[in-house]
Length: 177
Image 1 (tube, rainbow, N blue to C red):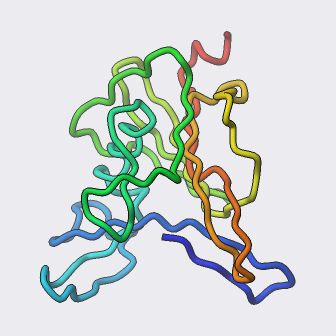
Image 2 (image 1 turned 60 degrees about the vertical axis):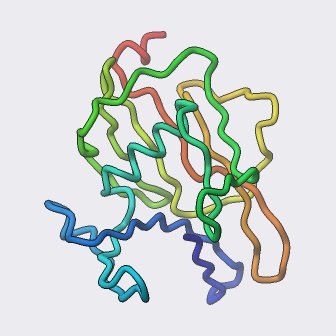
């Protein structure tokens, strides 16, 4: 979900990925945002998504080209406005059923260690959204294995695009390349 703050001199858009669960997520009480009542499904536990292994697995699957972005308001509907850019070489498989190992929150985002068959990678989820040029040609900065970009609307109605998440190579050998 996107949250806009217009209290300062310039509006700021925040990205707050959330997950909804029917039961508490073991070991993630620190990531619990709260609970809400769904009209059909009943009580839902709402979590900061970077601490939820399901969100992390799906986001990594998207970056690997194994998942399709879904529209927020319509079930089973692709969202063509979400773009995934990735390196041309295949990314290593995620270790199935493994929870995100370490989550480090910083001023602009959260870094999540994703265990893979070839060592850990870092999934960086941006919390502060900043407008930037979309990478249509697939060119990625050094050390970046993939990006997820999408758009958002400013309070004044202007449309922006930027990076919501990036995959960084945290494997020791990657630093030597």
